Image (cartoon, rainbow, N blue to C red; front, side):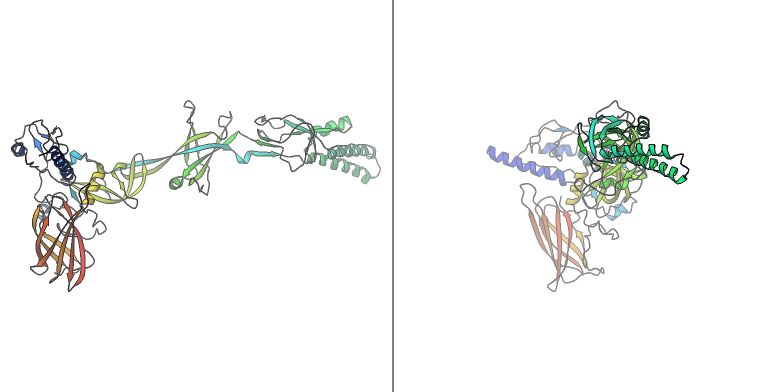
Length: 562
């Protein structure tokens, strides 16, 4: 045999070995023609306990009592660790249900969607299970926040009169201004004329206050009050009015004072005669004694957030800074269409200006979900439309079961329905089990939980039911197949044409394979024939029934060949 032929056969052996590892429920003995180790394999198969056993990781069916190389792929053999072996009941076959005699012994009777994987193989692929428990869950929501101005404490400074700015005292942005500090001085012809009117009214009052006519003295006093009120409405303070009375002459410029405490964030007042009018925004002052923190919450997290909920604020850039604790004061009733987030608002005192506007912080919100039935996150497989878990039913049986998830928290998923406390679910090797169950067609009957079917019975269609009576476990080569066909009412279907089609999809470089058989009627509802199964595999099987030339329906099931 040439080197290329040996390499080709070796690659074929590796492919078949991988195929057997994925699909076989038990260990198969490979008899490699041309190998001198065949007798050693047979000897090991009947070995006594206490001896070291070596196996090939690529072909677990091959075992040896010596640390040699695998005759199939030439891989170095690995020592097999001792593990407890479970007794396999009669009828325990991978992907097939047990016989009814085992179910009558009080042990688990597997459902139609259960799969069987021996404990040895579960250990090999790393299957791990944990119990389902009721535990208190606390969901943590983490978000990014930003410090912002308190919009209720923003002040805009305007003048009430037109005029010209002469001198500016607050001359840069970012300056801290206190209430009562002068901002600038203004020259306004209206202010000058009003001062003169006020002085004239004062002199008239002093002259006419001793008049014998009450209306004359009271009228002069009314003129004084009107002129003073006009100055006050133009933001001239009482101190400036008293200085005007004391000096007795109008002042060319008058100062404008800040009405609030704040930080200058905008400035339009400049020196040397800039003309201003009441519609101009000369200063914007923001009071930073309290600030807002705005956080972005994704829309799928919004059901867990509400007003008054505690929030912890962390500073990612200053590890020594203590975190702050507050509460959600407002939840904005709209979403950002670009980020799909909604804003929440918290208010915090800021006496030392530690919180600066536009500063980024981290938000942590903890939501108590209460005591819940919970499983680890790794236990739940999510298809996008449904969630399901694999339940360990014991004795090597694993059942894929749909569940309803209620939320995630602390590395666990709360389960609303589908599980009970104390059951065990698989947390490792889930995807291997998922592939196994899909290959076996395990989900064919998950949508019909009320229908119980016996082992070897295919799922019912609208008007057809098929039971595979033989073979329970097929062999490679010619097999006698016997079916029982009934209608929806359970009556045997007689004198029908029954075809059986077996299909195996393409696996790697191996092309898809098919096999067909036409069955002949034997007894009422019973049909029998011969079918050729090319290789060991769990074959997708379609049973089609016609009567009087018209199709009655077809049923999907599986036949496993060993």
